[in-house]
Image (cartoon, rainbow, N blue to C red; front, side, top):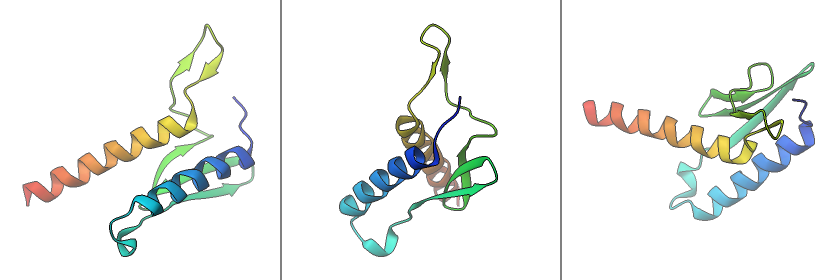
Length: 92
């Protein structure tokens, strides 16, 4: 599926704005980043690639011929990453 860079940037800006407003401490705000190189678009969080066009891991529905919305996918991926980080902290 082809996705426009503008659409990705709009989603990331929305999430960053939302998370900035909800941050308890702005010093602990870690924004999403969008990077594009050639035809590939990638979204990073805490330096990790959480989504890219080259290997789109969103769920695909054949009946509707569409992917899971990017915004909900990114939210889910950040929750997974947060869970991994919290587990590592607890294990220390």
